Image (spheres, rainbow, N blue to C red):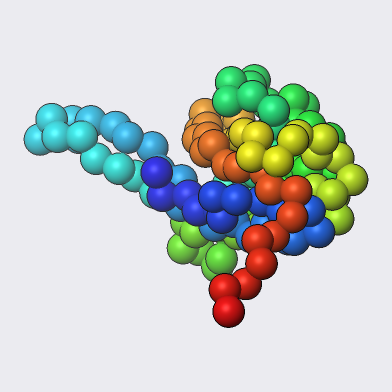
Amino acid sequence: MANAIDPELYPGNNAFSSARPVRHQLNPTTGAEEAVPLSGLTDLRIYVAATAITVDHEEAIDADLVETMAEVEDTAAYQATIDGDALTEHVETEDGGALYVHWQSLAARYHEVARVIWRTSRPAAAA
């Protein structure tokens, strides 16, 4: 998966994400599978859900945990930030519980998911 987000989410801490969505398809000439970058997506969203299997962003924990990703120029690389205050307000999972971050474009039929861990507080810095 070419998408990235911190594997642990914390209350009040913004969660930055980057994505490089691709579509896998067969090259009709060579028969080899190729990864084709998806550039120009206007409906690529990132959202936090309680389950790994969802139909679309309507199944996010809350609408405040859905962000539209912006493409960085025409690079097929996208970025978005999930607001830390929204995480604090809407996530009720216990410490160490699993959440699922989804990257989805319905128009491109693209959907990736990653399991992340919810932490109710940041661990103390090592001395």
